[in-house]
Amino acid sequence: MPVLNEIDYLEHAVHSVLSQNVEGPTELILALGPSSDGTTALAQRLADADERVRLVQNPQAHIPVGLNAAIRASSYPTIIRVDAHSELSDGYARRALETLKRTGAANVGGVMRADGRTPFQRAVATLYNAPVGLGGGAYHGGAPEGEAESAYLGVMRREVLDEVGLFDESIRRGEDWELNLRIRQAGYRVWFDPALSVTYWPRESWWRLARQFRATGAWRGELVRRYGRSNSLRFFAPPALVVLVVLALIIGVLQLTGVLHGLVGLISSVIYLPLLAYVLLDLAVGFAGVGIAAGPRSLRERLWTLAVLPTMHISWGLGFLAGVLRGAGDTVDASRLGSRNTPLP
Image 1 (cartoon, rainbow, N blue to C red):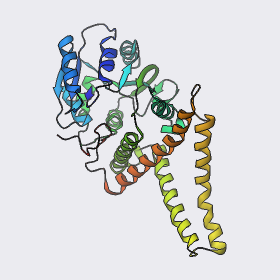
Image 2 (image 1 turned 120 degrees about the horizontal axis):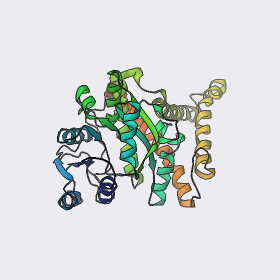
Image 3 (image 1 turned 180 degrees about the vertical axis):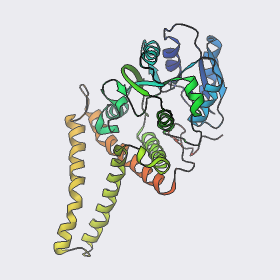
Image 4 (image 1 turned 90 degrees about the horizontal axis):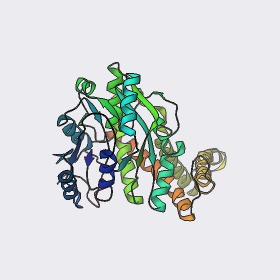
């Protein structure tokens, strides 16, 4: 479990792991980044209270670096990746181990079930769980059991990880997708089991969400640079929206200044149609709940949904275009770091 500034979530996440009922010995290795909110002291208390909890240091704070440090420090043949912002459902580990054995897969993952504690977080969670929000990856919805492109978190065979080389430490986001690509290229299967469920708690504020999605988009752009057509077409929808918005702004200025007029100006107005359709979609999702599976929602949740949907898409799309054009470089997800632009101490 990579950990950084998770004072509000770590104890629940650790409890959900330690309460798993599996045969044989287990351990939980926390890879500690340089937290500034008291998380490190909490992690030490948790380790002191249960001998199964072990601590390793991750001074760089990058997720794949922390994961590799924890894996190298581990003792057993199965690696279960967990997240400090998540909680495993009862029976998760036992079911995952059974699925690994039954299918012969190298990596097994399940469903990310986002949830929220505030109107904003619940609005984000609703869109995480909907194809209209995150594009319909198997682990965001109700896809049938079977082979998959990637796996959320993942329950992996250690021998396969050693064979393919663990996580790529040069990748800051999307490291799980890249690892699963190498696993599949090595001839192994990645498996999706919808009976496996993990509760995920999204970012707690609009600004943090925008920063997270911009960084994630940038690294997806970097992965497109590296791996090209191995990436799904659904990743190109948000950047296409950004391009449409930019073109519409340019054409709007040219129309207002009279540069585009007459028939040419009329024809160029076609650019507004897909954007109008997107606005209508946003309104339908936000107020009518079209395309989402949600129960009763308060007015605040509906209004936040209106803001969150374009925030996800545009932030991700802007990051993606930057990542494709110039690479992700040193882009990091600073959404848990206040005003700091880097997790480095």
